[in-house]
Image (cartoon, rainbow, N blue to C red; front, side, top):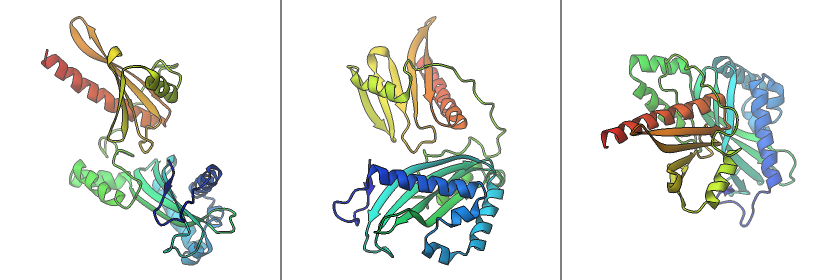
Length: 293
């Protein structure tokens, strides 16, 4: 999918190579900031952006954030939106907004965006604007202790409203801001879902007769009635993407259970969170099935 704003030059579309170039610029820029290469990151700012923030201000701001955030766990571009020669822009050229979701050792909730600019003469992209909104774990824990976990969710909802490409399902917070870290789940080697990859599973299901596809809150759900199986695939803006969750009803000793298999190519923590959330759903569903026999 290519997102182009309505005020962009009529008929213009970005090329695949142009998007690769923009993504590489954004990834390199964030990597330089995260690794303390402030001069390299500052060099990618447009002249207008540098004029608004001298290098000393820029480097000190990023240094303070890095000290507060800790090590990077994840940087993920979730949406890319293009505009060429918009009438309200300060300069003619190509603009691209990249919505980003991030996680750090001390920050589970972070979202923002980068706006890159390329002049009409082409050449490399430069960073025209950046915005970052976050709620660090220490502050979240204090809010939860003084008020409630629900108040943490409300505080994050207010902050993340400033992130155009962010949805609540994109980066769910931990079950409790002050919870003890969960033990990582044991992984199963090999094709646990019966297919070597998420794409292979989707392709096979689309070609299988009788499988019905629906979309629920952005998730792709495939109902394979013949196999009594339901497949769930998270959307691109979900932290567990790409992944496939297969749940199948089985009967043992007169009781109905749900067998689950998961293939997840995201980070370890995101995949573990995905499994835990479905394990909870499975337990609730099994209980309902037993109570309605």
